[in-house]
Amino acid sequence: MADRVELPIGVAVRGNIEHRPERASPFKARVRWINPATKKRESVSESFATEDEAKAWISSMDNAAARGLSPQQAVVSLAEYGDANMELALRGLELKTRDPYMAGWRKRVVPTLGHIPVAMVTNGAADRAVMGWIADECSRSTVKNSLAVLVRVMEQAKRDGIVDRNPAQVRGWQQVFRQAEDELDDPRSLALPSWDVLTRLADALVAKSAGEFEGWGDVIKFMGCTAARIGEASGCRVKDIDTKSWIWNVRRQTTPGPGGLADRGTKSKRARDVPVIVEIRDMIERRISELDRDPEARLFTGPRGGRITTAVLRDATHWDEVVSDLGYEHLRRHDLRHTGITWLADAGVPVHVLRVIAGHGSLTTTQRYIHPDKQSITNAGDLLSVHLHAPRTPRLRVV
Image (tube, one colour):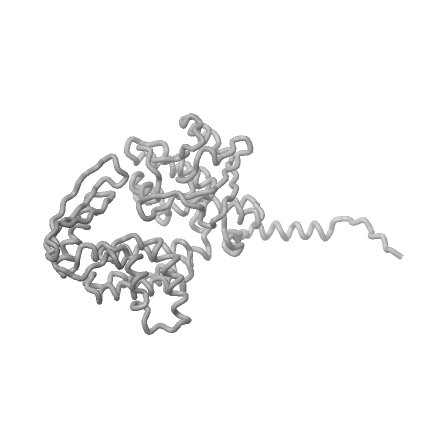
């Protein structure tokens, strides 16, 4: 980072955007300026997925130049800036506090926001990062420590003049965390009640999508019946499903990251086997045949062949409108996973097997789905009565 950051020089920059449709990030933004010390023309560029992002980047370069910062200083990434200035950012902290702060920096802040230029870290980006940590079921102290170190690093950037305010001041996350805890206390309450309801949801989402794309319904049924996260469904390849034993070997997930979507290991960092039930086997066979049984092909993609994310699915199917019309306003895409786990639990799958299928790191998480209803308790009492009154063969007493 030291080689890229220069002393503030206050230059006038000129920007332009080049559209390159063949690239994954097709909008290349570039700013140019004259170095007043060398009189040479210099430039810096960055590629973006949308034109609005490219325009925002050029605007940030203009603002940085107006505040007397060099363009190189404005585009240095958060990870580089934080690593180089961490001692300043954490000054005054006790050693016992530094360790959890640094763990939060390495394990959550850098993977989530580290690739973003410091000058472009917004309150919205910080807010989404924190909500993501909560969704990943991080503990309250983990979220607090990760946010605290981000706040300190951005406060140092403010002192350096790179930003004019601290965008990491996220409000209200504690309330969201409490809501998430309530959901985890009874996650089965978020599940759909039956296969018919899942099918009706899938059909309604297809009907609302552009061109009534059937693939949206397929992935909805797949997630509900396999208790899969949407990233795992997106990362599923043809070769991952054994159509003889009908077992899906879950070994990867597609997640956002620096440079766009990428395939990574599962959340638990371990592969797991999931049963593929009869209700969705014909659909899977059809999709595999349409893909010419190419083992490397993704089983589920969008209508243009792109990878699926929760945001893509929500927008393409008008999810919020559909679930509201069906009377399930609370339903999120992740609740399809809750649905699958709940159905498996209600079917009597032993908790230790359910844990493996769900990919839970802790048995405690799985046990939240094992809540017997009143009829189950009554049946248990009847079984005990039968047992107590059943005729028994006298035991032989060993002399």
